[in-house]
Amino acid sequence: MSRELSVQMGSPVPGVSEPPPPDNGGMDYRDWVRRSYLELVSSNHHSVQALSWRKLYLSRAKLKASSRTSALLSGFAMVAMVEVELDMKYSYPRELLISFAVCTTVLVAVHLFALLISTCILPNVEAVSNIHNLNSVSESPHERMHHYIELAWGFSTALGILLFLAEVVLLCWIKFLPVDCGSKECPTSAPASDSGGWHAALASTIIMVPVGIIFLIFTIHFYRSLVGHKTERHHQEIEELHKIKVQLDGQERGLQMV
Image (cartoon, rainbow, N blue to C red; front, side, top):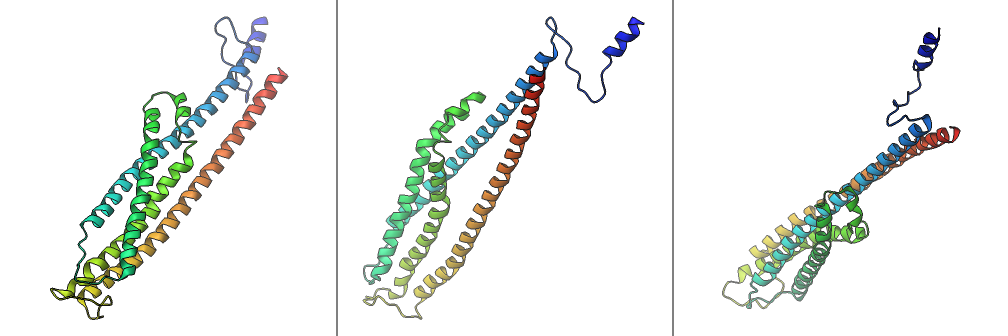
């Protein structure tokens, strides 16, 4: 009779999770609830660290991309300004020369500023990302320097590429306008409409204007899609944190009842 009673009392109740078997001298229900609580907290801590590491890798990728793009485009702009050959026999429009000089200077300054930010921040991020320790993510400056990283990314991709497109158009006008002069002097700064160089420069402008508009539309659409994706991710993370909070509250109530 006592053996049957002990068997009935030792059988698990349906729908209720059975505590783990005792080890190291036995574990009561209070210790089991406390250990489950600590495991839940530690899993939440690891998920937060995974999110921080994902942000660190994204910041590192942005800095690398902006540094490569800025170095490439600023080098092209400097070569274009140095290697352009102005025809001394042709009277260039003053507005064209001023626009070319200003566009080239601003283009190089914007890309060098983005390159400066990437060069200063990227070594610190790289040093932390190469450490195989989950807790080392807090040593990276990518969270504090988030605005500078986004500024370098915007300068290198959006503003820098738009200025580079304008640089190509102005360079075409400077190279093609004096084509029909030959060895003669061209004192007039307003070329004839039937000039071959004028038509070539106009054709490059007609091609580049739709390209610039498409680039603007794509940039706006890309950033809106990216912001929408981040918003959805934040909503999912908030829902997950709410579920974890509900589970933690349930664990605390169970611990208090015991």
